[in-house]
Image 1 (cartoon, rainbow, N blue to C red):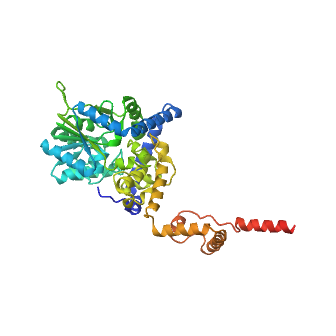
Image 2 (spheres, one colour; image 1 turned 180 degrees about the horizontal axis):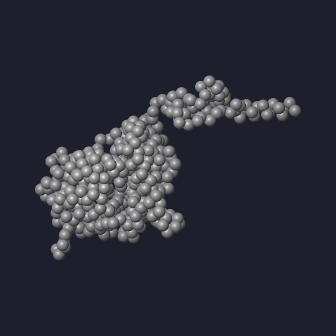
Image 3 (cartoon, rainbow, N blue to C red; image 1 turned 30 degrees about the vertical axis):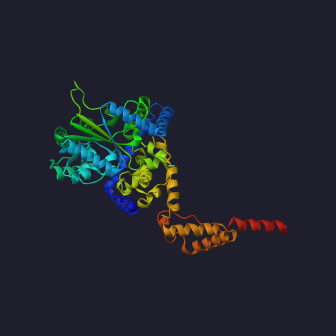
Length: 469
């Protein structure tokens, strides 16, 4: 996917004027936010917060031991009959998938939902090489038909209304016209069933890997993930190296907070735990299982003050809570990850120079940290990234000049006082509508009036009065 994160402001302006997207995103995020709230605190606020902190510690403990857990997971997966591959970056991961496809003479690929494969642009690589690849998650299937990237980590088609989805099905699949959602889903299900039956290879991501047993864990609601991992003769999972957890106890905690935070469920409809390929006597399952452990910049993040971002379990709760995401949707962020977590991860993955506006795409209200099931301090990281932007000389020239002038003026009592006098006089002339760039603020807000006299002036007058009395 082409990186357009530096176009966040212009893309946001387009999104804000799109009434259909506004309606869809507003409804979807509010629904997700309310359901999470009900599920996380169904047994009381104290229980929900304790579960959240337990999950946070499980992920941080895994990060502290990440090198050891990766080696443990590799050994146990290999013992289970899984082929384990390591990919330093997107190009290497895509080459490995293509090598597997050629080795097994694959013609058709059925894909389960996976942010990691979006990150590496796997679909584009497969299509370029003549491979028929079909997204089987319903939301991903819809946006693939419409040639769009996902706009939400969990709900990729959150930006579309039911009517827009209907029109896509009619145009792309010749669906008989209907406004009944159940009929639309049934129509898509029939189309996808043929894909599952004919696919040579299934691709998935991975929500977690349990290091002590070498178990790949997937959670989903549509059964497409289970069919992608059991029906084709080859299964390939592309999993970020940060998805390690130490043991079943930690997984049991995390698999409770993930569905509660993402879809408001106590447990997803399907929870799959994969321990290798089909064995003698098994009724079904793939003949070969490959797990590609993807780095793609994660090791670089691990070595920085932003390592905590790797604790993210991709629930999308921060997106549902964020007032900026609710207004702009996910596509405005210009890459795979949107919302607060995207505003942190995208600059870390692709470089601040390619995503300069994203750390500013936040009101710093703190809602993202409040809803995060593993308590990632996203507001702190957004502030740190803003600092890094200035330190790397990537800030806006006019803004930098203004801040330096402000700092210079505030470094001298005399200049400070003169500035206050100029501000009061200026406001008396121009009123509440400030000139650009400050005018962008006063378009929508009243600017408070300056006091008729500064504190310094009042203090001098008071001292003078006392001396004369």
